[in-house]
Image (cartoon, rainbow, N blue to C red; front, top):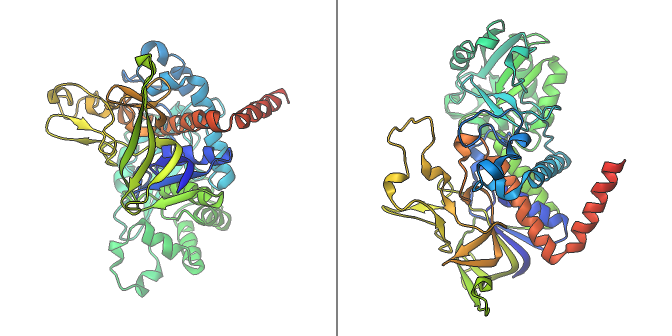
Length: 456
């Protein structure tokens, strides 16, 4: 099979790249081995919560503007503020168009979202039923928070969240209560209802009678004007519609919080992007993974311009039948997604054997204190790339092979709260680099259209 672009990895970076390629009319395939890290995510888009030195960030774009000077190895420094800004704006517009509206603060600042533990986490874009608390929490306008869970549900503990919220000084004047609701549908299922996970509850609540019962139960514990916090137990398909219906029935203000995995807020993003990719003509090879690639070496008189070229790849499901493309993107994630692997004394990119950016000694991979204020150094390690994020193998650039997302080195998504932002912007950048080579007229027309919108 022949494509313009093959993207290896079906997470945030890979799907962002894929959707942008499809916009340009490129014949695009995505190879996804299984569940991505989105199944474990909050469903919000974190761009930058802290700089690499641990400084809290209020306005991510202002902070990113100084990365080229202060953190030159960071992907944001490589991409530049303008590309990051365009990528995040494009993603917000795209997701809103395909069914998941994402909003940010009008002042360009981060906002706080409530975690299931009752703490506040800084983020940039959130889904419709994620309440946006201001970074200056003393300006919060919510007067009462009601934390509600479903009887027997183990993945959200309101009492724990309540205790932690009460520790936040700026919320000391806010009344915080908890409640548990039950569903009569539990009487009709064969399993113990305490074993139900968020996906199981979402199936029950998709039935109208159960939804109305749930809505009525909420009214017994909260009043209009209260912020009613519930675990994310509504699915990706009609989930947002069902939440709107509950708000209309009850006149309550709902706030979803992600639960223990699987996180329906994260799944909502992934499934929405995958469905849009397929609907727009993309080829999704789900449940498959790449075994190896076949390279050729282009030998130039000037050694600096000699390079590798990836001609085709082989996957487990397609056996001896290779997949060919003009351009490739690697977005397989970090250690969590097995995009990177570690042995006793070294790290590796396991499919293509790409060059790694890592310390020589294993003792330098981690801090001596497990709960060190600074995250462990291995989280910043990844594949080496050029300034254009092209992959490098045996010291030579692979000119038609880009890297995106958590597989990149030079940043720490856990410490910085930058995982989604780097994934989206690096995936977008890879797509734009590919489009520039295959369909440059699309980018020219796109640029003219943007200039006209600015003029209006």
